[in-house]
Image 1 (cartoon, one colour):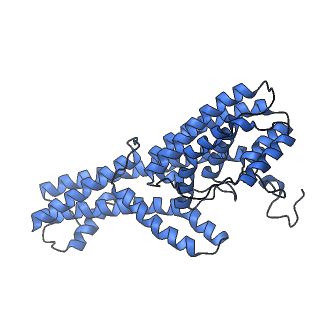
Image 2: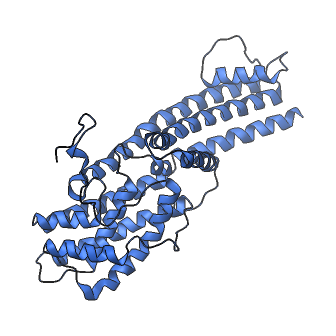
Image 3: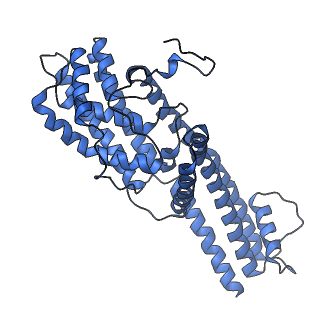
Amino acid sequence: MNLLWGILGLFLVLATLWDAFTTIVIPKTVEHRISFSGIFYNATWAIWFRIARRLPDGNLRLAMLSAFAPITLLSLFLLWGALLITGFALVHFGHGTLEGVHDLSEYLYFSGETFFTLGFGDLTSHHPIGQFLSVVEAGTGFGFLALVIGYIPVLYGHFSAREHQITLLDSRAGSDPTCGELLRRHAAGDAMEDLVSLLKEWEEWSAKQLEAYLSYPILAFYRSQHDHQSWLCSLTAILDTCSLIESGFEGDHPWEKRLQFQARATFAMGRHVIVDLAYLLNAEPDFKSPSRLPDSTLEEIRKVLGEAGIPLCRDRIGIFHERRAMYEPYCISLARDLFLTLPSWLAESDALDNWQFSAWEKEPHF
């Protein structure tokens, strides 16, 4: 029986170390991988999602959704530590490395003391195997704490880089970014050439996010600091814009070919992020949801862009709908599973950007 406890403890230690190593250290590939951390996140998010859905729409729900990622991340670290301490305690218990001690709780205390290198000295193993295990456990504790300390700044560095680009989109596409507003503002400012540079930045942003999400899937659950902003909403608005640009504009525009070329490149990388992340999070594409773009809204977009001087080309609208079908089902499933909101195609007429008001002001200035 004691040998079985030792084998169980060894398995628990190795399984926990492997899960922590693959989660924090090893760059991941696009695959479904059964892991303890994955099961933990799926189970906690399922509970969190059900509770949040029952809350009224408002600050309480937003605060709860925002707290999920950091709380579960810290909880996962604590759980890893508890499993390692328990595993080493079972190995010690199985070998009886503490003379005269037969209570498992004493072994758990000794293991925790060793893991965190407290060195109280009230319990000491004089057994050769126990001494060896104590050294290994102390080294494991140091290494584990170093990984945790190094992991959090890297994760928040990726989060900061993600939010930086989203915030820059605020003044160009609105605080609730939309494809129509992005094109309208650039056309109104005679700045369609600048849109090429903007889409190039979003192509690079998408490539960086693809790398970040593959290595740190929990990043997808981190919410933006401002209302009406999210990485999924912003990226969907960019994909909407690229799809519309590829359908072409009526008239002769010197910037159109360069813009369409860049739109294709940005679309390819942006869709890559959406599809791979949907697969990683097991968010099966939703092909049955109603269209995000009713015919009446499409006609309104035509009208808005026509007034801005860039009327849409009507005979290539089929390309636009083909492009939409390549990413919208994945965006819809991710928005549903992550409790996020997808952007509309046109901004509301009285919508204000985040910079135009603050919580201190009762009445907006604009």
